Amino acid sequence: MEQISIVDSKDHVDERVKIGVWLTDKRSSGKISFLQLRDGTAFFQGVVIKNVVGEEIFDLAKKLRQETSMWITGTIHQDDRSHFGYEIEVDGIEVIGESEDYPITPKEHGIDFLLDHRHLWLRSSRPHAIMKIRNEVIRATYEFFNNEGFIKIDAPILTGSAPEGTTELFKTKYFDREAYLSQSGQLYEEAGAMAFKKVFSFGPTFRAEKSKTRRHLIEFWMIEPEMAFMHQEQSLEVQEKFVAYLIQNVIDHCKYELNILGRDIETLKKYTKLPYARITYDKAIEMLQDSGKFPDLKWGVDFGSPEETFLADQFEQPVFVLNYPKAIKAFYMKPHPTRDDLVICADLLAPEGYGEIIGGSERATDYDYLVEQIEKSGQDPKNYDWYLDLRKYGSVPHSGFGLGLERTLTWITGEDHVRETIPFPRMLHRLYP
Image (tube, rainbow, N blue to C red):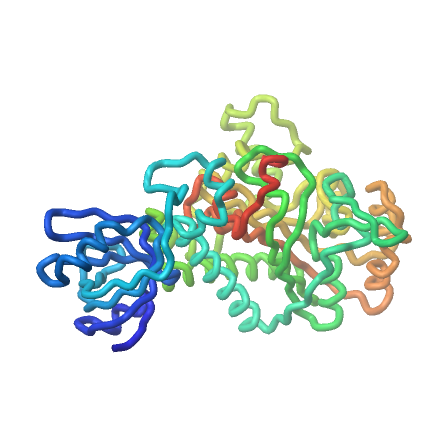
């Protein structure tokens, strides 16, 4: 008798197998018990028939408590009524570990309760499905950039300089110097691009803002490619190709998980069609003002959630908003060739109210301009000597972008709350909701 995982059931129909499982729920109907089982790879149903297994095993099945671990033996059958498509007719049960008073019952629980028990909530079907999709997005990310000729460069988590100002950075001491938890690996990726042409980083980033919105996290994972000899329009093509690639791979490899979450696959398919729409910041302001919904909106402001949602709702796919005012963007962005008040950049807005999932730009290459912009941002150019060196020794046009993994995952899965995509317990959510 072969020991298998639940996910491999399709390869063992009508075969007797052994599986290590946990019990997630159960119900009885006369002389039949239905056990809802999981093993870390998938969820399916075990059917225990009294006349088949006998009184002792049937009574044991009825007494099992939620999250009891056990070995089960039985025969795999196809089950077209379930999301998974298979079930097991149980003929043997061997309890491994007892479980009593498991706190997360099949009833509804509030988000704060679930986050307090995140170490256990990961076992439930919805976070399990989210994490499987997250894993596929990560796998597809590495595959995409490897196929496109990128190499991975790991940026430091402790940094001595700030890509976008120090107001949203966690400050710490690095022996006798000030240091910060990284808010972006971008500046280091620029150095990598000058050595390897196309690079990307994929790591944790931190923002010290006490946001209470569903769209912001204190800690999140960022995918940040940087590309030498590349202007902004070429970068936009990489960005949309990357996003479409992620979505297509989730559709191809995570249908079961998408069904658990109730995510409409036909909707996701629309987001794989390229190219995505492009509008300028000026056009976006015009659209917002003409709508009559934003009477106080003035040119020069950054967009918040209501504005981004409205703009995205005008398109059936993600939309790029191009060339924002220089005053509201980071110092490293390349100035617009014909407008002193703009920089060459773009935000990619996701449909369905999820907002910006990518921010990117062409990078400034003029040494003196960068020094001036660093000073205007209130920082000391000496802290950026190494970054400025990139403009002294064979500078080239280069562009890059950053995609936030958690917000992108929230959009792909159709979840209401970005915190539901956090992979491990975050007990600090009590301090920073």
